[in-house]
Length: 324
Length: 47
Image (cartoon, rainbow over all chains, first blue to last red; front, side, top):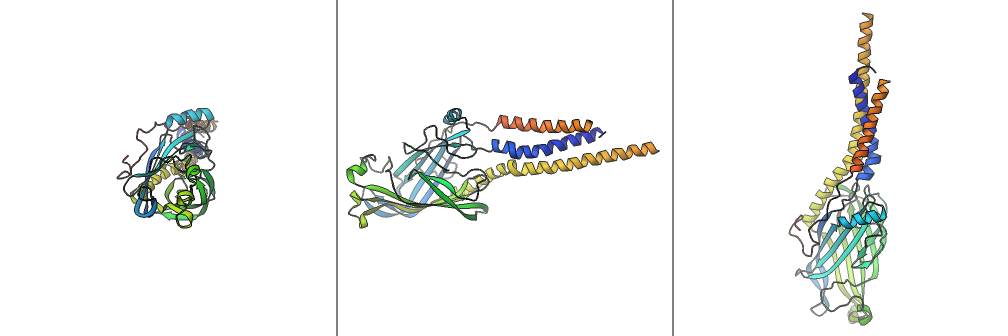
């Protein structure tokens, strides 16, 4: 190769061709991560739900709406400490699930601390992971699937039961124009701890069962529509039943007193907002994982062709000069 | 020889760029000053 232009084109061709796989298999796994300082709120609603009226005779009543406000907030300082302690890139989320009745008054609150790997979403057992103040040791995922979510069953942590069980992949779906994976998890009737925050004062969740003979039971079917690129759910619904058994529920039909029964769905405006947010993040991930490597590889081939063409033309011109 | 050198320059530049970008990483950010919510916001993005 003789001309400067040809050499420059060749250098650029090698640059682009080498950058493509480096971006895809070296940079992408290191750069695709959950930011440690994320803050996000989601509002969900259960219309025409059944809710135990604690102050009106402890009877289940039909209500127009139960609202669930779920906030998550990344603790950057705790993440830094946990990363130093474990040698992994860690994210620490503090979340609060606040449940309010139709009058806006608090029904229950469950705080959680969720600690996980920023790249793989695997749980990390550090920084005081907990549910409602109780230490837990999570297995599987919670809130979010890994990047490039696979169409298979995963283990999913359920905060009410403090246990993990499979969330089954049930096939592709389209949600608001987005191609997503659909997963379902069924939690059978399970005895669960009483939340530490209750709508009435004077209940000690630690001794409630011992002193009254009453236990709290829960079953749920959770549905998730997950963007396969980012692993972020674009929609989630839950059909939940919660009831007290024995003790103060002994007088109820079959000794069961419904505490809550309803179908929880994302509020319409939050559903639209979540889809828009995920679509924006999906584009960023796709650029890094697919579009940029593919574009660079194509550009590398074009530049290599241009370098060879330039060289061939240079040699032809020189041959003509020699023969003339 | 010059072609080989040009290819080596291109390769070295690609490796250096990727190493520099991944070493810089993504911004660390900071903890949000907004509280964990105990009431439903009127609209998304309003804490």
